[in-house]
Image 1 (cartoon, rainbow, N blue to C red):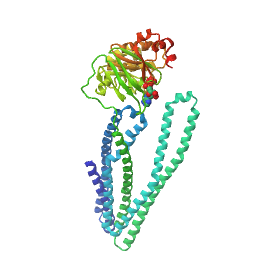
Image 2 (cartoon, rainbow, N blue to C red; image 1 turned 180 degrees about the vertical axis):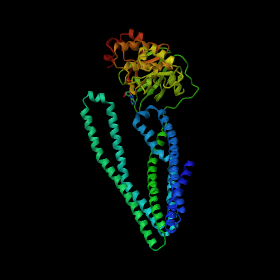
Image 3 (cartoon, rainbow, N blue to C red; image 1 turned 90 degrees about the vertical axis):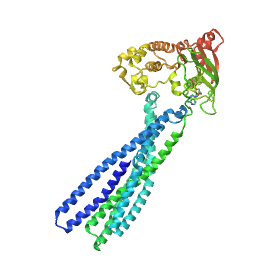
Image 4 (cartoon, rainbow, N blue to C red; image 1 turned 120 degrees about the horizontal axis):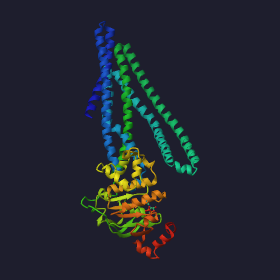
Length: 560
Ligand code: ADP
């Protein structure tokens, strides 16, 4: 910042000196026949001009650097803050809105951070410097040009007030348009399958129709502003000439001075324009700063626990003790959940859609905290241990498996360099993905597409298992994919689940009878309450139990 301020000061000084050199050149040329002075003046002018350009380049470089270092740090702070916020925040805010904060708003601040104060000050100093030099030349010129500056600022500010909202409206429409495109391109399969292409194109044209007039108006506004600015500066030049002609006729100034006044008047346009731009940036930055502060002051509802509470190695026991939970204050999704799962056992979680199975799983990972009661793993209340520790010891396989753009290795280890390649390969072998791995062109370095393009649903699920294996948790929560898989993949999955469950406690939201068959205990939920809970064998032996009816009639019949 100091270097930037010094460079800008040097730039201003040189800008103020140049016209003086020209005046001296012209006046010397008119009065003297000696060319050596003229040559010197010419060389001096060229030297100062070149130096001014060099200073400008270096100042721009430093300014950008300061701005980006500062905004990158802020980007980092805001992004990691967003990642720490709980899921209820992420449900309320779309990813688009968060990107707008982390990228759009912070971009708007880049200029503000880099140089706002310095640029504004330097432009004010340049303007004041020019006016002082004009006053020194002749008070009448100084007075006329000061009046012009005030008039120019007021006029440009006025016309801007008319043009600026048009741009805001245009940005809004273009955001709507790209949002629409993004959403519908993502849903191409569904749109085509449901024959909705016509509907989408209709909306597409409707958006374009809305866009055009706004765009035309915005450009008309822009043109009006541009033309007004040119007209105002032309007026400034005319005033300067008029005053100079008057003074020259009276013999009060030389022709060199006339040229110098003209040159200074030209130079005045720069600070007037820049100051207007800076004030505009200040308004934008003000709005952005407000939005970013609001985001940073949002606190996660999930507070990290204390360091000391460590979860033991090996399989963990699970205990729900009087858990009540609702996503909103006044709703109740789980009421009075009370059960215990011994270490190393497998719990099959059954229930209709919406009965609260996924919610129970989410509580185990502390994506949400219960409003009442507590969840304990091996006797430790999960609110008291560090989130990092909890999520290291509890593995979660969801129905929607996210594959990120990156190598197979990075997708499995999440960039943990501690995990050796040998281990990854042996885990993939164990899961029956050995052939798949060998068929990849670059082995573990093969790049996967984001969204898992190129992977079958079964492969994606097996990769998610591999992730869990590599972190070796004591409890696995498995929300089994409900989509049907081909028999060969089913068989692979069966084998993989067997390895996954070995020497671990497991909670499975099962959709296939084969998986339910592995459960030691069964818990059936209905409307967020426990309908039935017990050992699978005992429940199966009891012909009146809901579970034995499910096994007899099939899940779809009883739980539908
Ligand atoms: P299941 O997994 O048994 O199908 P869930 O646990 O997903 O059931 O859902 C239980 C209830 O909670 C449902 O009524 C569902 O609408 C509601 N619900 C689930 N997720 C959310 C959420 N993120 N925000 C608000 N309500 C939710």
